[in-house]
Length: 600
Image (cartoon, rainbow, N blue to C red; front, side, top):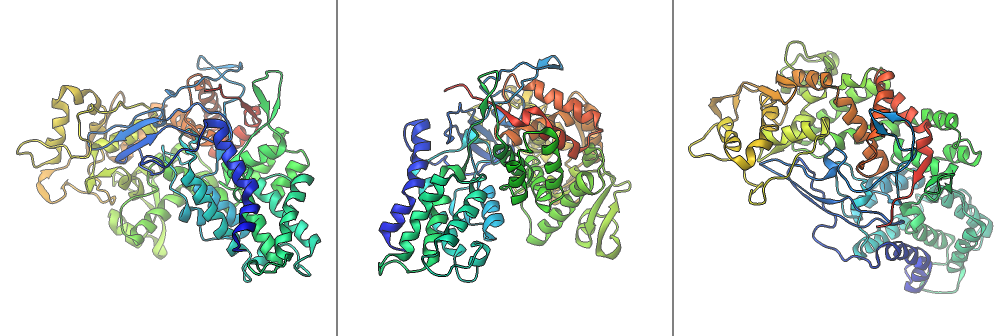
């Protein structure tokens, strides 16, 4: 297996294919740069930059530069709104005065690190998250699957090679190979078992059946298991490892390449059953289709809306659907990576997952209840942290009572997410509400503002006085007047979710918790803010927009507002039931169509 020449030969098809994806779209493989990779999240401090390459198809980048910090900003289209470049055609009905496209633009999307880890877990039983070990972290805007930011580089090719070799080597280890090979080989030259393994692995990894020519190509790799070469182990599993190593670097594994069939509108393509199966499984599970979903595709059940809905209902009953829903919220609401001790973060995680599960899966209710729930799931540690009664039995649902808390905005996970300078940041919390919950676009700060320095004012000790300096500057006042008052309405809760009445370490600086949501009125604390957001009528619309950004793998573009309006209207008609939203979207014609992006 370690002989250089067999490995190079076996990988020739996959590496050349991957390079063709890159060269065909962009002319050259980009060399690594400081902005390639990295994961600085808008609204959480730091800078996200980059606008580049997707593989698999031509794509107009909607990247740009997003920066945020102490003075507060989130830039670019990813922050919400429909400000990205690009157009979308298609007729359709009217919703809210906007045309509703019959299909949305899409191109080939590379699997994210998390998706790669999920696939090797589900197909090969590999629980080690190897992609997270070898590949640079994806950029979050706030989601990690924005294909307009995916960069193809020599560093990526090298990392994928190391990833594939590591996964393949461990997959055929003596204590693991039975999970990968569906038969017992009689010897190194057992061609029947080899073909059976190639066929089974190819179907799961490529998310469709292999063609006879593809099978024949992979079967040639068995020669390296039977040749008389002292540098290569004379073993059946040598060939299987080479097959896996090659498949794991093939563009058809690494990218979700949707071809489709032209419809009456030449720019609108109807996806086939296997392409729909891939869309379905990655949306609901963040992973590859299972055998049952591939069987449904083989039986041509997924081009039928009722068939798609039935399979979606089955997938939603799996734990992987809950895991994917949790991850969506962690990215959207910014708490995927927050400060805190391991045991406290575990308590935060448990609390937030239980609330999502209760509203979406276990006791389906209006999704807006996520922001107004009068109960939360606590253990004794978190009850003490929040100053609430201990739950019966050490963990369970507890009423917020008259504490001023309600819904997920009271959770330590969310309250910790938009902090800065080791404390809460009223500006960052304001950005969070404006961009993530109302989908408003916040302009970047002036170029001469150092966003990595906290606000200051001569002789000012109290945070309220220091942040007031934002509103004395003509270049800052307009923006910060729409941000800081929101954050100050949550200021009575620190980055650990604890209630406080004064600035940390400064009892002479009282915290009132009074705030204002511009255009919607004053509030005090997360319970009142959550209700203001629900009453605004914009929260559910913004949720739909964020969901579509995630589902499409890119920010929405001008001309696509009508889709959000139409889905949000249906969402309201379904009493804001989240599962109905998912099922209706999947059963819609739009889910089974795609529109070609215009050439760059």
